[in-house]
Image (tube, rainbow, N blue to C red; front, side):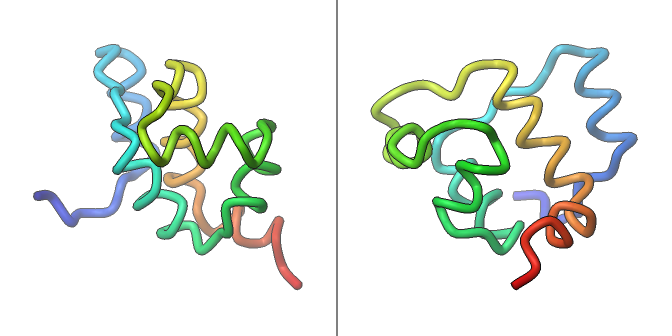
Length: 86
């Protein structure tokens, strides 16, 4: 497992290589790395709470555009965290 933080360069290279695949288990880890609840993450991703829950349980696949958005959010973590200040 690679614990190296994802950088913007990593994200851009992945876009170019079309290598982004985000299994549901990784979506849960990514959300927790962002420090967001499922509700906050749903708002950030522009989907329903039920969709986030179903993605995280692996009931439905995370579509490609949502995978890309999640990766960008991780790369831009400090900015994303500012969006959800109490």
